[in-house]
Structures are given as structure tokens and as C-alpha cells.
Amino acid sequence: MTDALLQVRGVSKVFGATRALSDANLTIHPGEIHSLLGRNGAGKSTLVNIIAGIYPPTTGDVLFEGQDLRPLNIFARQELGIRLVPQHENSFPDLTVAENIFSGVLPTRRGLVDWKRINHDAAEELAAYGLHVDPRTPVRELSSIDARKLNIIRAMHSGAKLIILDEPTTALTNRERAELFEFVRDLKAMGTAFIFISHYLGEVLELSDAISVLRDGRMYPVDDLENVSEAHLASLVAGEEVELSRRQPDEAPPEGADFLRAVDLHSKDLQGVSLSVRRGEILGVIGFPGSGAREFCRTLFGIERLTSGTILADGQELRLASPAEAIRHGIAYISYDRHREGIMPTFDVNENIGISSYAGKLRRAGGFIDLALRRSLADSYRDALKIRCNSVDDDITSLSGGNQQKVIVSRLLNTDPRLLILDEPTVGIDIKSREEIISTVLELTRTGMSTIYLTNDYEELLRVADRLVFFDDGRVVSVLENQGITIDQLTAIRDRAKEAA
Image (cartoon, rainbow, N blue to C red; front, side):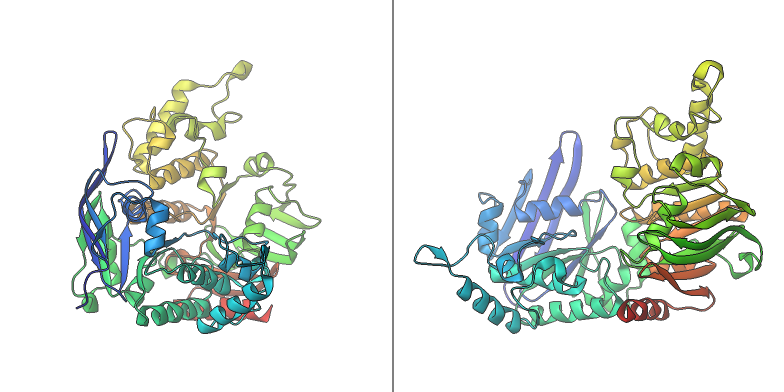
């Protein structure tokens, strides 16, 4: 085997009283794709930030091509060939493809930017990597897959030898994901190494030459990849056997038992959407950003405004002018953006759970809040949803992402909803918390609550949904009973809708 490109030896990192990383060891060779798995807070980001030079280790060594990296900052490490491609786009959307490739070092001629050379050289570089786009195209006009490739090409242009890919397949179709993997494998064949971070266990197994799991700051290499299953990886990440919750076929409600009906909804994002949600049903919603899927969910909660159309619950027409109106009608919504539209960061757990009921069950004569009842309810939700905190007086920001999400679920259940709208409810949380949230949703559905479930995790969706509705271009393009559908079939339907648009 070739000499190691990257060596992480006995690295630990301490932040105050918190040990984020303990004696981590990692070796990556040229042309190797090494995946990192772990819960949020397990140490993945800490390790990647140490490798990239964002902050130093407390103890231990990081070597790149045999050179000690400790004295080098992030810019010096980039010069050596370590590049991070983050989960969110890091290109300049209003600049052209060529300008993005040459950003920071624009060639000049006689003191002026040499645009002819920039566009010519960029075209040659794009062709060499198989990206067939005009270098003068603004980046915002690129497809999702071409934008992903461009970010990697930018890293290669800067001399990358090790590229860290953080959740690179988000919002890609099945075909685009396969195209990205082929692109990565081509670079691997040229000797480029990758650290691949993803919570999709199937694609980790598909792409990786090696896998390491981080758990509670400690690193565990995964052996015998040819015989490793997704279930085994899930257990390694969680540190225990994880039982995957699943909706049973005989639990699906009968046709005609509609709780909510949307009739010919029109808005700036919706084009004649008609859809029903049965009482006690989990309706799975599928669609890319901008497809209308998320916009439909937010319309039902009074965030987005309709220009025409009718929404009925139990036959009664609803006027959903605001989230407060939606809550009064028994509709609750969990946003995909937990940090901006979910937690109240300056409040403790108790206040975060109770705030949704200040105008309802917690309100007493004179406008006072029943603090004893608020605490009693918060404690009961803490126990029921297994929220891991010392007490409900803990600051919400001290909790892990999974426990923060459980607090948000508790807050909405505190409004006694009849329809729960979940928008990416398990994104960015650890496997155990994910399954606990799913188990809670399944149990509530058995009591008659209706649920709309929007997620890009299709394995998860197929486990919980009774029906599947596909959105594209602001319209419902297909509605299917979830009976024997595979992930490949689901993604094929979704991709056909996108490609036909």
C-alpha cells in the first residue's frame, strides 16, 4: 500500500469541561474514500475542523504527507492540498463559473483582469473533469449536480489532494447521486482522497473504501465492509441495538375517513393543489425544494398565504391567516429549520415546551400563567419523549440536536393538535433520537391524530407512511398507497416528475 496521505495520531480535543474527542486515530491513503459516521455531537465536526486547521488539537498529532500540521493554519493547509466542501453551497452564486474557479487569483494582463484567458482556461478545466457547462454561466443557473461538481472542481483547481465532503448528496435525484459518485470515483482513480460524511448509511456502504464511526468522542473502525449491513452500522453509531419503528399495513385508515381536505389551492408557489388527509393517517410528502411540497405544508399552518382555494377540517372551512389561527383549529407544524423557527434559544426547556399554551390551557384569570401546571406538563413530556436533560430548568441550547427536537415536538403536542405537520423532523439528529421521535409519532397516529410527514430520507418515509404524495412545480403529480414500494421505485417517480418539469 502507498504511504499514508493523512495520519491522525492520538488526537484529543477538550472545550472547557467537555471532552469532544478522545485519542482519535485515522489513516487515509491517496485514492481512498473514507467515510465518517456518528451522531450529532459524536466528534465528527471536531475531527474535521482539526484536520482542516480551524482549531488545534489539545493533544496528539496530525500529519499530511509526513509533515506535522500543528504549526499550520487553515490557509497553509489548503496550500498543502486539504480542502473542505461544506454541506451548504460555498460558491459565489452571482459570479460566473469561471470566476468561481479562479476566485482569489484572477489572472491579469498589463494590469487588467485577463477575462479571455480566464474563460479559456476554465473551459479547458471543466472539459477535463467532464463538466459540460459554459464558463460564463452564472453559478445560480447551474443544476444541483453541476453546482456540486463545480465545488469539487474548485478544490481540485487549488491543488486538493484530500477533499472533505460534508453531506454532498442533499437534494440530489437518484440519477444525480449516481453521477456524483461516478465523478468522485474518477477523481479517486487519479489519486485524490476523500473524507465522506453522510447520514445515509446505504450510500456510505456503496461508496466507501473504509468507514470509521465516532461515538462519544471515540473512534471505532468498521471491519469487513463486504459483510456489513445498514442495521449493523446503525447499531455501531448508536452504541446499542436500535429497533427501527415501522407502521404496520393493517394500521392504515380506510378511504373516506378524511380529516382534512385541500381543494384547488393556489398561491405564488401552489398551482391547483387538491389533497386529502385521512383521520389517523401518516401522509408522506415528497418533493425537491421549490416543488410545492414544503410550501403546501407551510400554507396549512398559515405561514404562506393562499390566493384562492379551500381548506376544510371535518367538513368545516378553515381560515388560516396565521399560525395562531392554525393552532386554534388543531394544526401544529414543526419547521425544517430547528434553529431559526424552532427552539427559543434564550429560554429553558420548561419555557420552550410551555410557550405554545400560554393563550390556552396554561392561561389563568387576569392573564397569568399557571407555572405549576407548566412545569408538570414539561416534566411529563420529558419522561414520555425521553428528553435527556438534568431538569426542565436546563437551557435549551445545552441539549443535543435530537433532544432539542423532542422539546419542539413536546411544545406542539402541548396544543392538543388533530393534525401534526412534520417537515424534516429527524434531519441532523442521532439515530436513537430519530427512532424515539418516530415511535412517538406512530403511537399518536394510532390514537387518531393525522400526520403529514415531509422528509428526504426515503427509507424512513417508507417505514412510516400510509400513502405517498409527490409534488413538482407547485402541483400534486402522483398519489400512491404505500404498499410494496421500494426506494428505487420512489426515487424513479420523483425523478421523472422533476425531469418532465
